[in-house]
Amino acid sequence: MSCYESIFRDALFAGQVGLVTGGGSGIGRCIAHEMARLGAHVVLVGRTVEKLERVAAEIAEDGGSASWWACDIRDEAGVKAMVAEIVAAHGRVDMLVNNAGGQYPSPLAHLSKKGWEAVVATNLTGGFLMAREVFEQSMQTFSRREHRAQGRPGPAIVNIIADMWRGMPGMAHSGAARAGMQNLTMTAAVEWARFGIRVNAVAPGWIASAGMETYDEPMKTTITHLHKSVPLKRLGTESEVSAAVCFLLSPAAAFMTGQTLSVDGGAPLYPNQFPIPAHSNSLAFNGFHRATTPAFLSAHLQSPEDADQT
Ligand SMILES: CCC/C=C/C(=O)SCCNC(=O)CCNC(=O)[C@H](O)C(C)(C)COP(=O)([O-])OP(=O)([O-])OC[C@H]1O[C@@H](n2cnc3c(N)ncnc32)[C@H](O)[C@@H]1OP(=O)([O-])[O-]
Ligand SMILES: NC(=O)C1=CN([C@@H]2O[C@H](COP(=O)(O)OP(=O)(O)OC[C@H]3O[C@@H](n4cnc5c(N)ncnc54)[C@H](OP(=O)(O)O)[C@@H]3O)[C@@H](O)[C@H]2O)C=CC1
Image 1 (spheres, rainbow, N blue to C red):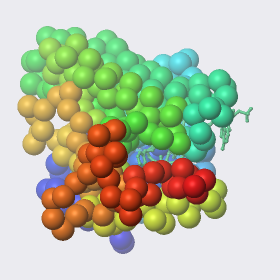
Image 2: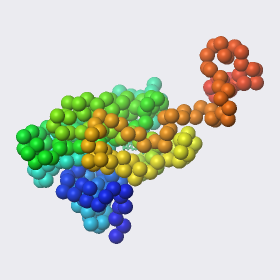
Image 3: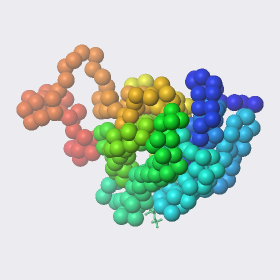
Image 4: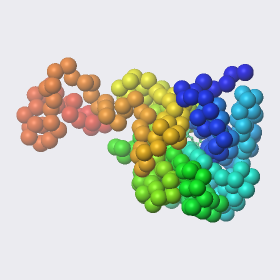
């Protein structure tokens, strides 16, 4: 038995039902394992049956409880039917982790409309459909009064977004969708707060997840250098993202809603265009300072492409 070792207390989610989209691999698989370890029944959602079956079997082997549902989160009718079946089978949904997502690298100018729409639908529309259906169908099952009588809060929702605080160069479609998801997180948090529903987000930085395997070789080479631009000098782990998600789902975060937790080793705080100087002697990048820059430093104020042409 290789049961997931969670940092949280046993039975934290006992008796609860949690949905994890993208639960068949990577970060979602890890989150599903941790939620099951903490006592939840986990419903894994994704498009590939074999992946979902495998993770459900792993969880069962560890003594946990899991089922799965094959669904494309972009398919509105499919999402509605799936949530209805899950609510019918389990009586409710207590936790939703909107983790399914992904993108492919491309310069902005080369993005096709179809590719843009595929990524925005995956990372924004799909999460919206999942959250709306879980909200709507939870509210139908338990009226507000019943909910209160049972002293039970509505479902807790966590949306996985990404480090897009400085744009997402090379993945514009994903950056735009994730920024949309962060905004949706805030709106849903306010609109649904009176039903006891909390909505938060987790923004992973570069995580050494199984998802990184989906990229082509040039991208994988780039990824091997990413740790250099992280102040903590390493990539994050799937379990570090999972811990943030489980915290936000738990009563420890009962007074938190509409927030985004970053799990990124400090990367957005350190663009790493130049090494941190030993002494604070920085050069402001504007016309005046360029005009007075010592010649030997001029090349260092150019982009590598510009420098190549000189
Ligand atoms: C490092 C940064 C940190 C983030 C890390 C992670 O997220 S790790 C997690 C990473 N994990 C993942 O990212 C995994 C999940 N990712 C995916 O499933 C896909 O990337 C998806 C989100 C586009 C979904 O696509 P889908 O199910 O709709 O499948 P589809 O194949 O039918 O594509 C539809 C259209 O999109 C376009 N297009 C697609 N790919 C490419 C490409 N390589 N090149 C160019 N264009 C591409 C194309 O127009 C295509 O239509 P066409 O021209 O073929 O008729
Ligand atoms: N790894 C990282 O560094 C980072 C990851 N993220 C995000 O974290 C999340 C998890 O990523 P990660 O675990 O790394 O990658 P994975 O590729 O392993 O996970 C993505 C999962 O989403 C599922 N999925 C994709 N599209 C759909 C869809 N339309 N409907 C249902 N399921 C879908 C996939 O399964 P299937 O294809 O079978 O449907 C897969 O299991 C993603 O949203 C990712 O973009 C964000 C920032 C950084």
